[in-house]
Length: 257
Image 1 (cartoon, rainbow, N blue to C red):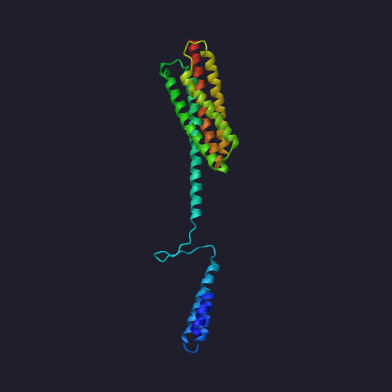
Image 2 (image 1 turned 135 degrees about the horizontal axis):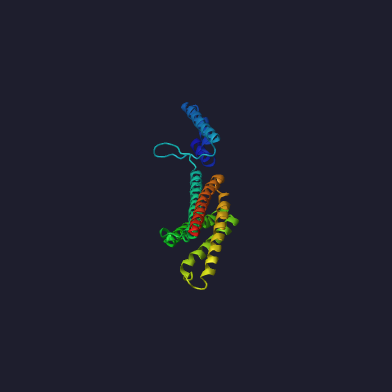
């Protein structure tokens, strides 16, 4: 009868209650069961205390017996943030080198090397095309990365920077098409085309400078990015100034002869 009662209680009540009932019923016959019940209560209390101390961690037993309580989503978030940061840096570097440096260098070559009265500079056109094409490719690659960043991240949707980038890409593409559609030397539209090409080039350079500074304001360490490009512009301006002075000196000497 006692065994039947214990069996029914074990089905309805949890294990600690069964142990308590069994210990109370058989206390006279087996004195060691009291100690077993105390040990079980101590282990249950220890487990409860452990859960209260660290309720957020989940312990998982491994083959080596070492418990792990790592949170993998935090590492994945940091890795994703680091990857996004590297892509943004690549976007800025490509645009500074391509659109912000090589395209202005190509304009400097076209302005100052083309009109030098020296046979050493009669190959200015291939150098101009090399600077423009390489700058266009690098800048377009950086622009494509910027579009991907804007589409993949809600925090990177920069309307002004995006519009300026689209305008720069459009104008630079039109300028690159001039390689295939420019009038030949001696055509009646050649002079008008040269004026249009120069005005478009200067407007493109102004848009590039504005776009790079606009994008640098949204980068990490924005001041460093701005000062780096200020240094690039200063070097280009000094080169253009030196070539302008040298050009006027050559013209003055020719006029004095």
